[in-house]
Image 1: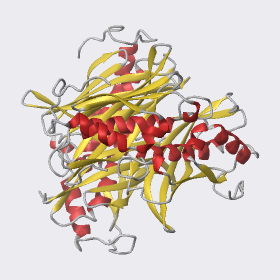
Image 2: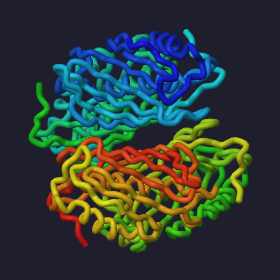
Image 3: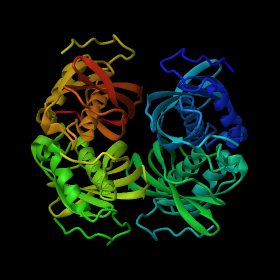
Length: 157
Length: 157
Length: 157
Length: 157
């Protein structure tokens, strides 16, 4: 995983431990292990998730299922938002919209989530998902998402 | 699975074998087996998918992950649409939007997809997802989806 | 306008004056007068808005513009939600998604908004928009919307 | 209006007259004149629309109505897509999702639409909407949209 770089981007995290908190929360998302997804990058306001291909993730034509693309995009956007939340808060997805742009035909998916608008209660994010095939990346989906900050509900096991 | 009843509802299928085609296509969606999802009901213009709880499907708070809710809702809407398509066509999800309405805390999810508007090229569907806990159902998500009919691209293994 | 009937439906309004509050707020939405839209029906958790055709509302093919369809659907959903909010609160649209289902070719649009999920902070609504032509109604659009209750921000002039 | 610059960006227009076609189609969108919207910029794959403030465009708190923001964003995305379509085609909005990010409080809105994915039949676009107040721009909304190319249906009066 690339090293988290607080403040390298547009946003400043409220909590200096944001990267460790994101990783700990991600580790509790049991479905990520079922799929085989891992965190590729965290910074304040951004999170990238990687998912290698396996046949178990496919729809009927042998490509990554659109719902699975949505699942890692939802988590990438969600953790992008969570990285900016205070220590006593957890994150909830309110809604998301996913447009599928090209067949997700390749060796690996990478979902790159980032915060568009960090509000106190609601946080709006975007995630672009690319599929990598023989070293070449193609944008295959984009997600627009609304998150809610659950103040006073610490995210813990 | 409940018996398919062609013409029992608002829609008439173009293909009398629609239920068998939906089941065969669903069986090729390898991700459904990974998750443990099964078809619960098919009719012309509608498809229900059921997903029993397991810890491997959870997000960080121990409930079904929003992306997994989206995955079965995407397939339920997709097969609702596919049931009305001609024999030489396959189905593609163009986009979907999912609103999460309540924590998906329970023993089983049921996604009920139905067609709102069957066009020649584009088909618009909705899917409501309920979570069942101790025999009681709660609506936990709703999806609005756009599908594309791929004429001349038979859905096959 | 049909008489508001509190408690006739699924929902109970917190505020007995909900219909008068919706009408007063609607009257402050200056854009509704510009378009020519009026309230057709209010009940606890539902609001219908009517918009007669005029050429000034059209897109390039002479039908109602999709954005105008979205505008009355946004208000119909918004006031459906607002009807359930407490007296000291105002309503904010967080986001909406609109699917256009058929050409909006007719004499009049009717947007029927209703609450799907009334939360304390977030309220999820749906609105179906029909176009009326020679006495016959056709569903031409559907909207799925997230509202926020702004507690302590009374809606007033 | 800034001069159209074909090929200055990521996309190449199929039709050298794309800017004139966009302007002619926009002029037939009667609702744009009602609102007071004008085209600010056209290039292959992008279109910007400007809308000065007037009280007639407001919601109940005196800011631009969310539906009006959606209307110019829908047209900005739609004409971004239309600029890349062949001469014998017209454009149809299939669906859009709008997130409202900040109060649209200012002198002028600017909606900047651009193509994300130009397919033969479906074109996916995004539009960011900013509000300008005392010379300072704030992002107030973002739209994600699906368009359909209507081949063989020339856009004309």
